[in-house]
Each structure stands twice: as structure tokens, then as C-alpha cells.
Image (cartoon, rainbow, N blue to C red; front, top):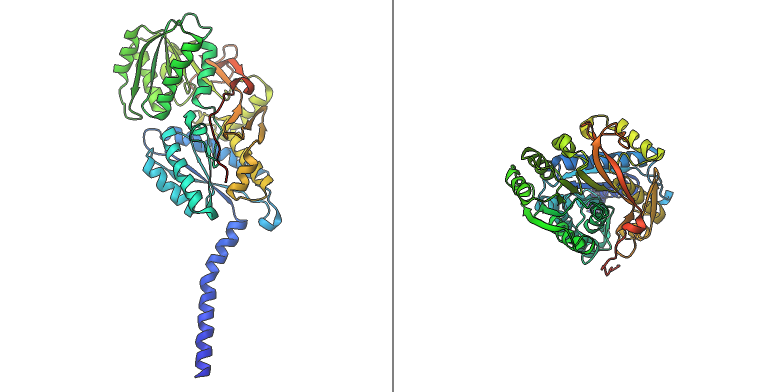
Length: 429
């Protein structure tokens, strides 16, 4: 009996040890394997082109970090480790984005990237705040590259959220640098997508026009469903009939391309002051009618003067040579560089430790630089404004997406001037 008891005990211990092996292996892998970064974005549906453009940019940034040996961590925590970019398709839906977030966390990601919708960003931010409070052992950082609703770094600011794009009010102020001096503009038409970002753009346009161009009349103001309008002709007809010399819009993706195309088709000849008119099909859609008329604000444009800027753009074109893939974002490169540096300085991938090093950090790449403002986690960087012209014209060496049209830089706004105050009351863990 004693022999049988010992035999059964030995078998039980062996089974317990075997069951523990996968857990131990997973723990070892998490300490020495790749650092998983989850991109949650609409990779199908009406804005799939915008999502794929983001993926190319983030992939290129990750490849750059890995080409130099990955993220350097102490030997005790696994030594140098590569970044691994995982794709999660939100299909442009908030519920799908939340499901993707849960999957990403379960898969081991502790850094989440998203940006192509401020509404989705707000939903993810709320979920991440709750998750981090509920499950501190698996806390997550949220790096935002394009969701520019000002509230995200004002009243809704979070220790776990960092925005690397200039928010909507900052971009509007940059456009106003041009509108203020354009005395041909006597009236404007405001149009945007009917969600938090689009609403914020129109509200701020009215406010800044009142401050800087009180002589300009608002000839019309309209919000339309996000990603659902297939025919913008009725909107274009109203814009033309209003007599406005200019349109101000924050539209992006197909909502911008279809709007501009419809305006061209009804013969509208006014200027478009845009947040995203420099790519994703917009220049090709408007054609010659946009020369000298389509204005765009960005953190960087391919025709920014300087050898370093040109080398950066040429390197992107070598990596992605298809003209249709030509939509490069400097801020996304700076974001991944800042993340890698913060992990190295923290000596850890733990979210709170990395966040502490991201706060106040500065990063530079190819002559472009920026600093994360600790008070609200809003990245502070210079902005540029460009106007659409034909490739080959002075200041337009590079075109956009093989369209034959590019953007000539007409304003360069330093970070110190682009900065705006915040109402954030940061709560730190």
C-alpha cells in the first residue's frame, strides 16, 4: 500500500509539473520574446485605405527600430528585444475596436496604437482606464497618432494616453495663419463629419474666425454622417450656391475625396482649407481645379525644405515604391522612436514605468523633433501648411501618390507657436 501511495503521489507531482511547463514557458517568452504592439484600426470598410496607410507607416518605424537591434533592455529582463506589430481590424466600429482591445491584451500586447477616429479613441481610452485600474498586472499604454479631438488631452486626459498628432484646435490655428492674410476670402462654408472630431473642427473654426477674421461671414455650416455618404453632389451644390470663397473642413478618407470630387464636378472654384487634403486620393480627385486652391495643414510634408527631410521621404519611397502607397507621416515615426527610447530608459515594458519616461521626453528624426508635454501628454511639434501645385513648379519636387500634384510649403510654424494651453488635470497612479 505504501508503495502504491508513493507511486500515485509521484505521478500527481509529475502531472502538476507538466501542467506548469506551458505557464513557465509563456512567462519566459514574455520576458525575452518580442515586445508586442497592437494596431487597432479600420483595415476594412469605407476607411480601409486610411487604415492601411497607417499600417505601412507604423511597420516602417518598427522595422527601423528592429534593424538597429531592437529595444535595448537589461540582460535580467531579457536583453535586446524586437518590436512586433500586430494588426487588429476594428472594421471602423467601436464595438469591434473594444473586442480587438480585449484580444490584444490577451495576446500579450501592453501598447495599443489607434488614431483614425476620435470617437473610437474615446471608447478605447475609457476601456483602457478601467482595465488598468482593474488589472494592474497587465496595464496598457495608448499611443494615439491621429485622433485629434481636443478633449482627449483636455478634460478627458489620462496618464495612459499620449497623443502624437497636433489636436484640432492647433491645426485650425495653423490654417488661420493663411486665412488671416487671404483678403480674397469674404465668406466661408463649414462642413464636417458628424462626430466628436468633426464637431470640434467646426466649433473652433467659428471661434478662431471671430478672433482673427471677424470680417469673414459663415455662409453655411453642415455636418454629415461619417463614412455613409456616397454622393456629395447635394452638399457641393449648396456650397456653390452659398457664394463662399472658401470651404473649411476636417474631413478625411473617402469623405474628403468624394466631397472634393463633387465640388469639382459642380464647378465650385473656391479654396479648400483642409486638415487632410494632401493625400489619400484628394489631389488626384480634384485635379487642376485645386491648383493654388487646396490648402492642407500637417506635421510634415514631403516638400519641406532641407536635405534631411528629402532623405527621409526618399527612404520611405524606396521601402514602399508603389505610388498608391505614398502617404508618409513623420509623427508616426517619431511616436515609435519615442516609445522605444522610453522603454529603454525605463528598463522595463511595464506600462506605468514606460509612461513615466514618455512624460517630458524629446525625440528627433531626420531634422524633425518634438517633446511630450508632461501636463497633458500632448506632443508638441512644429506644423506646416502647404498649397497644392503641379509637380515641377518651384517648391514642388515631390508629388502625391503619383498624381502629378504636390504641396508647396507656404508656412512653417515652430512648436513654440503651435502650442496651446490645456485644461487637463492629470491623475497619476
